[in-house]
Length: 370
Image (cartoon, rainbow, N blue to C red; front, side, top):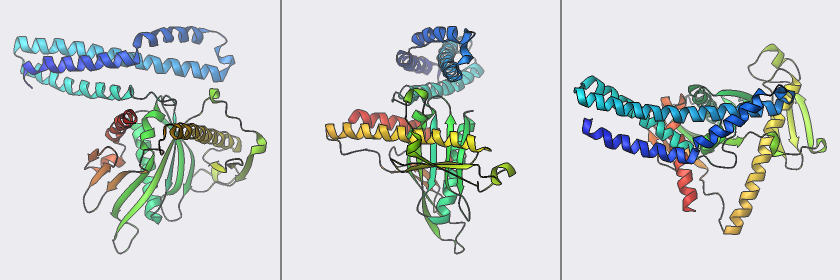
């Protein structure tokens, strides 16, 4: 890149960062940080552990966001200085360094810009994800396991912690279903665009004739509930069954009746958890999953009422949202946004940020059009 091109590039990034700061309002966040720091310093903070966790978690999120914006602004200013020095001294090495920094900075500002599009009611929440094998037999079960690993690897790449609540293993290979949480701010808003039916086309490793097989797996993404959600779960509305866990696990997992299945009688929703060691832990985890499902059900009912009022025929999302093709060519394509890559191995290893970002932008554009 010529030195003369840098001023326009830097000006464009400066405007983008200005727009981001106008939406995220770092000054308001700093004011909230100051208030939360007073609460954190209170000697009786941990007398109410639930509130203490809420306060400390919120403080950590705000501090991280403010630091991120400040760091990007500082890098942008430093890059301007570096370009000036490279121009004055005709330093090709410094110019190459500036070009590399410009590319990295543009990528990070683009990612933060996507974050400003997450303004939904529950977008700030952690995410509860369930993956289910659908049509395709053993190949579908194997595909569901591949998707589970893909999302866990994505979380690992971003240093997000995860917790698997329940895994139901298929007889020959793969899984029937799995439910897990991604514990990170805005995990729900970020991953909610992954909801839908995923389709895999490949030569089946389970077909001794080597035929091409199409299989399907479904991904459900829900917001994790919080105390403020006030979801009532009267004991009379619940049927709780205990059973012995199955599949891989330690001795204490597989040799006692520690797994828990809860049926919500009014709605027929059934959830289970078997990955914890104790029955109490599994019951608590299953109740969290049930609360999230009921929260989403209530949101969908409200949305349906609004759609009816404005004459909207329903959800504009298509259920089948992404194709993973391994044969006769290599491609992963989002059917809503047309975002496409030719390296399925990288995608299955968790490299899905491009799909997520394009999905978030598509969702915002679709909402504005409606």
